[in-house]
Amino acid sequence: MAAYSDSERLAELRAFDATKAGVKGLADAGFTSVPRFFVHPDPDLERTPRANLQVPVVDLGGVAADPARRAAAAAAAGGAAEALGLFHVVNHGVPQQVLDEMLERVRGFHEEGVEVKGEYYTRDLSRKVVYNCNFDLFQTQAANWRDTLSFSMAPEPPRPEELPLACRDIAFKYASYVQKLGTVLLELLSESLGLNPDHLIKMECADGLRFFMHYYPACPEPHLTLGTSKHSDSGFITILLQDSLGGLQVLRQNQWLDVPPVPGSFIVNIGDLLQLISNDKFKSVEHRVLANSSGPRISVACSFSTNRATSTRLYGPLNELTSHNNPPRYKEVTMTDFLAHFNRKGLDGRSALDHYKL
Ligand code: OGA
Ligand code: NI
Image (cartoon, rainbow, N blue to C red):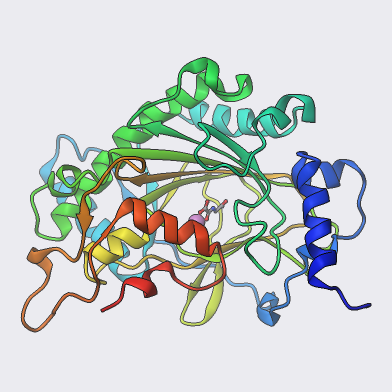
């Protein structure tokens, strides 16, 4: 292949970005190969052998009324957060119809013409609604085969008319369910740490809620690129809904393992800030999404954080979890500073937490 200069690459990125049509636009145009700027240089794409991860399951059935079930769920969530940083949630109370509609509506948005979705295409993360291909397109070495629509639903939900019509109604409905679920999960995680049930809630860990609605078109050369490159999530917890296509993997003891879709369940993963305040007791698991020759794959990640825009609260390892023998491992940081660092860095394969290590 001819040398690919930085200026050539930048020109191609700019031209692509200006289409406002994302990867979906390339797929629609009938591309049979991936443009060069999507090609990942790392040999880490070794796909074989594929193996499934045994994903711990947290059963939320009866946790509100039955103390024994609640204790079992707290132990299961805490154990999984420590050992792996990820678990499935079942009997979560969100109707299947709501999950199905959410995925269908996200697909609907991404399959709108560019005259509709292009209105929302931006690299300005302060806009209320952000649609783009790779938030870090101009920062990372290689782009991912993915488009994303994102917006905050808490603490200040957008006005309905500010959201794209395709997912307007479902976004509010889904947010009300997911907020309740996030609260229960943070309560259970608090309990598993030996804290009061409302400890993490009082620390504003569920004040902010942002949706990331991903669309991974079928990829003509899935062995050359990725859907989402290796990263851990920035917030406290993420509640992820994936469709039935698969492709999500987690890194466990240097091996990438598949997280197989379980219909009707959510995946919950621990984010960097919860690892930080738990002083590494809970693990912010590294994960990625493979590109796939079939598609589109659709997923919705809901990230819980504090109020991203205005919070000045400092987060550091909790006093209750540190001691003379287990001193704090991280500096204190505000969510705003952490997110600025996370977004500036992009998904470059390194942990954003390293920057705050003592
Ligand atoms: C994310 C993420 C996984 C997926 O949004 O942080 O890891 O399945 N998404 O899309
Ligand atoms: Ni993630």
